[in-house]
Image: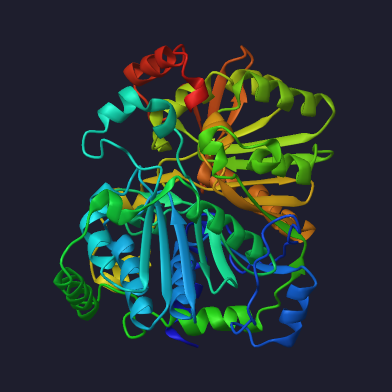
Length: 521
């Protein structure tokens, strides 16, 4: 048994992996012939004639990545095994441990001759400017910034004079290697998404996929890369002398020697483990659809077919049995609340998980969710709110790699960031939240997977573990909300106010809910 397998067995029971999705099988996708024709290269990743045949049949394999450890390993594997190209697009890329870890891997790939194209939304990229300028000195690196700010260091002027344009952002999260294998989902490239932050940890969900679906993912990336909204980074942040690249490489190598990287002797061989996962696990293939907003959505010119929401509705259809969803930011609006009510009138089960106020990293969103809770509960919607603290007793992969210790407060402080939902055996995993911002303002991506087996696993996971990670909301005899906190010893603690909030916070949330800004949430 390798070091990684020993480590993985140890972590698979930790905090349910926050979900309990370990060892999920993989699934598949059908390419839309109306999309751009992207040539799929010979599948050198698997060296499996059967896999190549399934790809030709329009099928794609999937592995769900709920665990931060698995998710970072998957990205390392994809980058280290690329033969020709790596394409990435992300909403957030932070200048921190994880951000630099992935950039170092990309720099090493570029040194091997791999062509790297990096597309970052300009909302969060400003602290990376120095590193990006250095990387641009590499002949194999291309970097573009999406929807850049005009007043880059005085953004208040953009919000005053260009608010309509800068209020739309590219929320996509996607990495593709060789137009053959990809990872998408909810995680940005920042330490808190991978249990490596000293302040708090996000619970999230990604999906590794390869095969036919990657053709559509590659077409989507190309649409964004070639969009007029994607601007060469040099035009925004300028250039630097070539010696800055040398200095950056030396800095990364120093971190490598100090153990600040994922090396075989420090932690595990991510390549060998995931190669084994892909080659020897009983991976299943089934239909799936890569769905994405067009970059035209930012300009307000996208048709319904070019928007993720319309694509998902067309593929999934109206629920006939159940709708189960997890959304970090959940703002159903009055229209959505009425829709959920109609589902319940028809006897359709509706179960939703979102953040509690104390767990939500964007507190203002809670104001525009909380006003619909009573109505949803009256209509029979099952509501759960993620707890702000999940005890993590074991060392995380980050602590083992670096030899550092994350303070208990930061290690246990948690927030839901996953976005997935299930409609009668069709499962979506991606970047889309159930809120107006994802629906109308930002661009999003994800996969709709037609798999009863995946649906069953999600349902069983929720049945068995939901009350361990979330409060259950109910109405008391007076029609007021109560929060039930199920303890491991069988005790149930009941709250009659939002757990972990002060009277001042609740008053402010109530006041904010009256502002006419729900459309922005």
